[in-house]
Length: 196
Image (cartoon, rainbow, N blue to C red; front, side):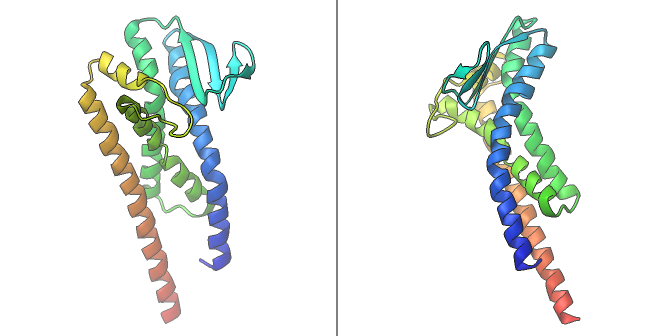
């Protein structure tokens, strides 16, 4: 890979990462909570994204991401709806890391998968709120609603915390190891071409 290609990929990554992290918030709220809540019989009554309130009426809220769903069929489905936000982004991260290992991606596709593989932070960030650490460290804090939902569903709090931390570390390690492996493979191919 030439210097130009490396610079181009670095620029793509720098553009894709913030976009991908913003999309993580949208996915968490709309797919994770919203879609699951609607499938559980509820309806969305309040939606905040990137500091703006979109429902019930448009305006400034200062909240980076939240959704309120009413009339979910049962209390169990309601708590599952609450937990499904970070769980949905965690699933995307798992699929992205597995995809990076199953196939050798190149170019923008690889950059996008690398960015998506970082969505494990959503689950870890939700877990940090149980310790009083705000998920969005610089500007927003709230009670540990996802942790509380897991506990309400009968998942021991310590198990939820361990699961979140261990899987986050494993996903990060899987990503880093794949990138190291790809780098070594590229280096080996370059050496083989130079030796011929």
